[in-house]
Length: 129
Image (cartoon, rainbow, N blue to C red; front, side, top):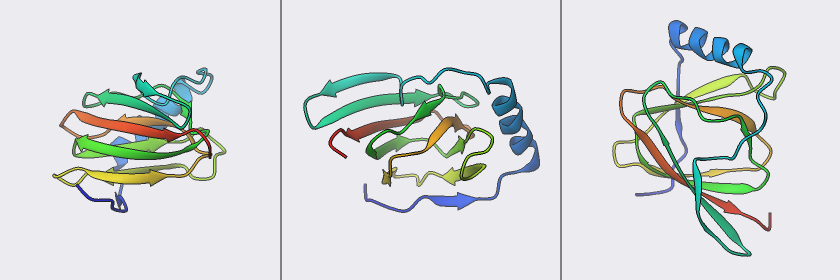
């Protein structure tokens, strides 16, 4: 697995509508964790595990630190940002071998498994950034 820049692809209209509907219906959601559960933590890092089934959204979350995503499986994953954010939403194609992606702190989003395969990743949160 190598570190790559995610391949951003066009969002089909029906998928865009689903993502917009989710954003509208969940606009007042409280912030949750960046993933399902913490599997390791020390003074320097916090490592999370996240799995999303096809069509599933994560909790609304904010990346308060820099992260590395270690993507194990999936085919398409999207990010839906709250209305008024710096960007609207985007869809990424996951390489078949997975990949590792650097995520800078600051973004608030829902992750969305827009594909047909289970999406699985580890998030490595750099606590001192």
